[in-house]
Image 1 (cartoon, one colour):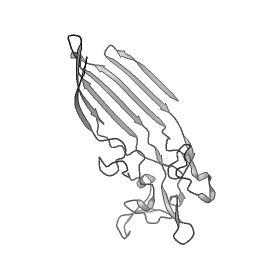
Image 2: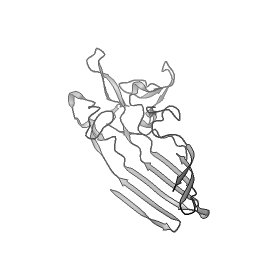
Image 3: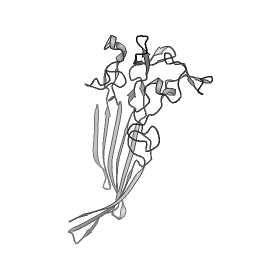
Image 4: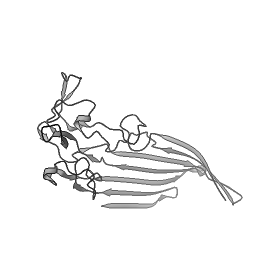
Length: 233
């Protein structure tokens, strides 16, 4: 379902708003991709088994985009492009020895005796607000100068998206048992543990496209600003 709203709220403010409510499901393993089985399935001996079906990587339930311009006194204009979407899914897997000789494949993780489902985990909702402030000047009706200041990711939000560690064996704090995780190890010897009472305890951002905020940042940039001037004639 897609909703579009556009109009002039007043003589000084106009906006465009778009909202989308959607659902997308597919076959897959680590991250289901529509029409593209890049990850195959977790259980190759039972291809397309029930457990390999679930939300796809494109499964964004809610998405909202707002664009608007506010005309202030003195000729100053404020323009924004803001977007937000609900968290995208990902799957937690674990290496499984399939023949007893160390040849492992990745199967969906088992936590407290229950095998997790494909794309059962959710990452972090994406939110980014960009803002532009400008003041046009016209000279002799032929020349136009527009100095401006632009601000990206105005609230300096870290947006890791769905880029999280997807294998129990790769977690920075290991679990007590890769075959059936019931606790998180708090030291190297795993003599101190913390029981897993929520799957959210296994959510650890994983850097992929860049570590601008530090480990775990993969989508977007931190707060940035730039000044400029546009000249037209």
